[in-house]
Length: 407
Image (cartoon, rainbow, N blue to C red):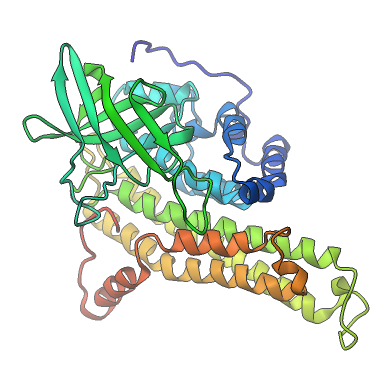
């Protein structure tokens, strides 16, 4: 990183998320979400709009030109973005994880990059590791002149296709894990948009291959506590990563409510035994809409309440990355509690949507099944049964939650 000057391009409308301008931006994104998903058109342009709006700098403090919003405020914005397009919200998760991992470091050059509007991606997971949280990386960093050469293959590189920089954990020649910041279009970087999931198809969660990618020495860092890809003891950043997915699910539930209202208002036919002449006036159909809206409201509320506990843990964190252990455990417990509830509400909302209309709601053209497919895909991250077992063990036996990045 060669510049220490913070550069921003006002107006950064994302710094005022309640403004009409930001609402209009999200409406523009939502307008094409279904067609993009149906035709597999990656949202490069739409993510560009959010970059220009300053979304990537929301957590940065005034020293970097950011508003320094709370995690609760950030996750409320994430829910709104997911309501417009769940793929985009999910793709931005890597950026916020990298940013969060560096917030407590003094005068960090990578935060200055975020202040300039640059986005981060992460390429961590490898298919060869036996355990998901293993650091037995086959990706390597070897010395070459004044810098390094990076070689390896990563899977689930969510958001990297849209990012300016990719953070890559790799093993050095001495066996030490380091993190390389690699420019997305550096020579030797091969992005493959090969994620074939049933949902979240436009998150760029595919394979990234690095072939002798030259990395400057100051772009290679030690594996600091709590950085994405680390298996160090639990930090609030890992807990944040889990709650972020629940925020995406809450946004999907809200999108299902929006779609239900649109379907009901647009129905021109109804059944001879219906309760009213039009679907919009039918109290039974209105009841369905109200249920879906209630599911969305409750999912959002659960995420934001857990975020308040998480904010307390974040506020206790020092420059060494350590947080107050009791506040950290309380946050991890609240976030673990949200997972089964929020994902159930999102899936119920996306399923009940089809009760709001006739068989036409199941057409490919309508593409309303995307809400269920997206919710099911996000909910499949980090199986719920492991979370509920740990929460139950705590409730019954007072056991502490596992001390890893999945809690």
